[in-house]
Image 1 (cartoon, rainbow, N blue to C red):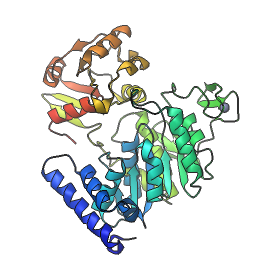
Image 2: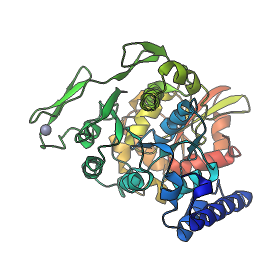
Image 3: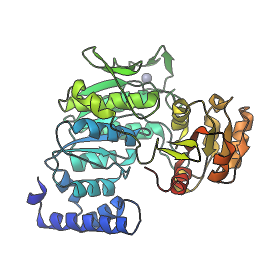
Image 4: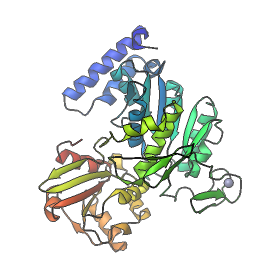
Length: 411
Ligand SMILES: [Zn+2]
């Protein structure tokens, strides 16, 4: 359905939603996508469904990498025409509603979806393709069990055989969740964090791993052969052709995200040769990976919000002075005991600075891991403590936002 053909209530709701978002932006309250979508859905509870109708839609969900993969996928789909997307990470139905209302008529949409909302958003947007990235523990004190999330997805996807799945062959939880779907394209991007998938979700037996393969010791669940594979600095496609991937984003993790974007694009009929050049246009994503020059230091921001993403951040960071910042406010989760799930030893040999509300929890953790560090009170003190050159900043959610605010909302 184009927006010109929307029912009257949906038309009004769309207009009010856009106006509210614009007002919120003008008032300096972020990008306005949550409030705009919220008001629109109050006026027309079916607004997301109305706005999604007639578009070819890809959804992207998983614990980590959603925002970046969504951005890369939207860039790739841009080959075909205008793409609506929630590029600021507002990944619940309010954010989706706002993104579609704001974009106007577009033939395509790529939407990042919070794991918990995936069943609802599938019902309302009727996607053509869903990319499933990974499932691991998020903040301990508010996460559903990883296996429960996999079960929820599995049940939901079984009801939607018409949807093409693009799934991560290296994550047993994803393979099981997509197990009843008739159309799955598998990609391999590696799984650095494995502590949430030692036990088979199907039968409870142990999962074994060797040489990149994994298999259940008690039932037939095992790693499927992937069609898209990260290899060296590029991606192998299903025909066996290898494509060099040049990204502005760091780390092997982002090569995996690029492979996912190429696989989703292929499900829309886009060849890798068309899609690959678009990926290099993506620089920072909602401030992540942003680089800022200040007093001769090149500061790079890496967001790490749960154990799996801390490991990824260590992989992305250069061997350079590193500032770690941890808060434990509501969006971060209040419990910092997850720090003990992460191996900080990759930081040995680097100059390490710590700050944030929970710097002392971090201090205990680093001490146990034999990583020397220094505590700084402010971001300015951190900059003054390191020599000119690269400063890597790894921070969890609200700590990241604090630092971004200090750097004048870099993007
Ligand atoms: Zn099993």
